[in-house]
Length: 183
Ligand SMILES: C[S@@+](CC[C@H](N)C(=O)[O-])C[C@H]1O[C@@H](n2cnc3c(N)ncnc32)[C@H](O)[C@@H]1O
Image (tube, rainbow, N blue to C red; front, side, top):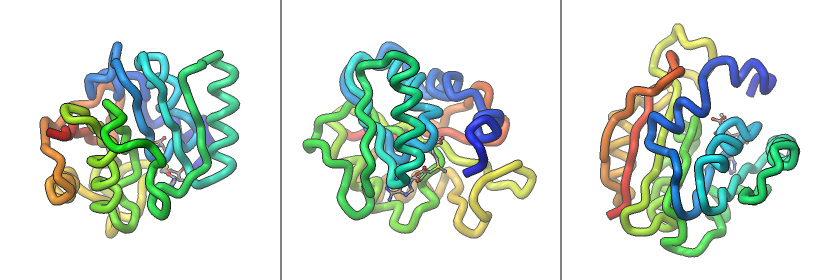
């Protein structure tokens, strides 16, 4: 990850959340890989329940926790956790929203999507974004591991999730977005 300021110059996090339908959201959310808290803060400001912001990297956990505190938000729990090895730690069907932002290039994306399916309540949604499959993007994982939307959709369906729509993202020239659902 580049420095937070640089990372966050590539997209408008609030615009992305709104494009994915995340506004006045009821219920809890699980954020898989919160990084600097780029999406955690605007998500928590749009969600009535609690945002469980998870990351394996203690520096990212500390950065997100500091921002949560600075923003005076009381509906965020930031946790250092390896969700690949340990799962997200939430009860089955306990979340109404999952955030999978710039994360599906990891090894074992289907397992992560199965964990997403497990934690979502019926009717719950997952928002996915990732860097465009394009060498001209200013950042992003190497193209050989960078997933395209159609690949993510196929993985999601293998995990039992339903594709709802591809979403045009406001303020995100380098990213694509997708909404998935648990039936
Ligand atoms: C590319 S960053 C994206 C951060 C954030 N979602 C965003 O878009 O701004 C991916 C984040 O996922 C975290 N991560 C990767 N694998 C993980 C795992 N197995 N468990 C928890 N966090 C993980 C990394 O530490 C990193 O902070």
